[in-house]
Amino acid sequence: MLDVSEFNERIDLIFDRIIDTIDASDTDCDAEVLQGVLEITCADRSKIIVNRHEPTREIWVAAKSGGFHFKLDGENWLDTRSGESLTAALSRVFREQSGVSLEFK
Image 1: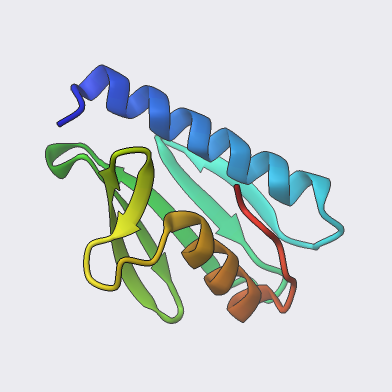
Image 2: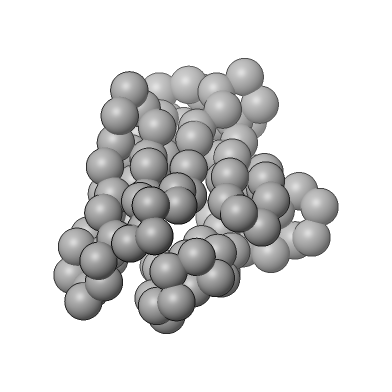
């Protein structure tokens, strides 16, 4: 298991990549980190919340379609139930809520 410092460093990099992807797109969505939580606000005012959960070293995502927990499996963050990758899940829920296709890496 990652130590807290390494976990937070990885999450900060992931948040930066997500924000950069949204900022570089032509979408009317905004993304910002507030008190360590990434909030993506879509044009219809719906939100996607990406949160770090230190006790379990997981990334939690809340969207209209549900809540998802991602755990690091080597180098990939995978949904603890479905096995879907974090990047695929973010692309899917972003498309569902915004109508815009973005590829998160």
